[in-house]
Length: 315
Image (cartoon, rainbow, N blue to C red; front, side, top):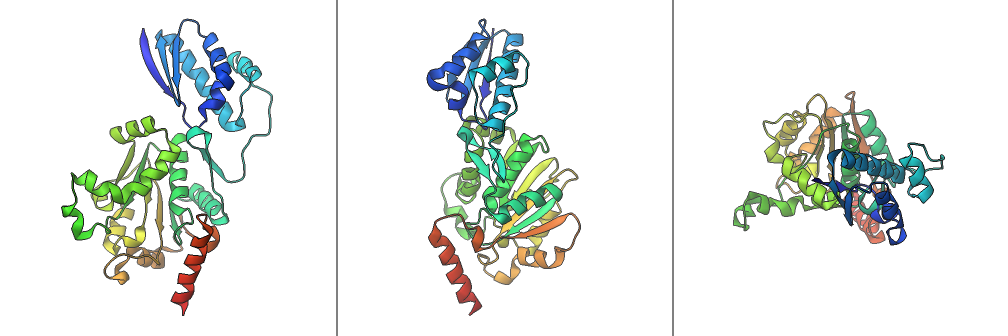
């Protein structure tokens, strides 16, 4: 007898289990030789290896069905188990849907420029997403990276930021290097926690499938077969950004996000992002998407605050 853990990734477990576990009970009834224990987004299965493999295949077929139609009935279960295709329905696939996150949460490109970023990422290997805070640049970029990974277009996700905010105070913070830097990388963790189950994400971080690290840690590497995101790129110097862009492997997809109005470098003129935007535009295979206050999806006051600062800057 062996044991296997199955993660319900990208769907709401309640939709798979059914009211009072009616659907789960029916699924289990198809496999009388297995012991099945379901808790939240995890199903633990005990039994013969071949029988577990059949159970795993069925669960993944059901997950695909839920991701497409966002519902599952006992009739669907019977047909899928019998190897038949349930009747076609109009999928619950609103415009701009990127992925289904944890608990079946639909993560979509909600604004014109978020959808434009999604399209440019599909067509280009390097995309710059530039605009003010609250426009969803980073969140959309990470969703696109997770989508590429789930679709097996890449084997890894690599997220990085300059740690300029830490500055000379880094040495005074408690803990090892990871503990010192994690607070500056937390926005990246927050987005991933919306999109990948906690246990699965922990495994990915342990085995290097998902990597989150300061920009300085990219030096000397070749980033290949990966979706790579550089966040807060306005705080990278010219040399740092050049170093990052030249890490690009043959099968990599890069997104660079930044806000040129929030440069934290001591000398704002040293921002590598503003320099790169001047010299790289027009290169084939590279795209620049400009976000503005119309894309802001945080509290309504954020849009007004950004506009007030922009107006003041113009004056």
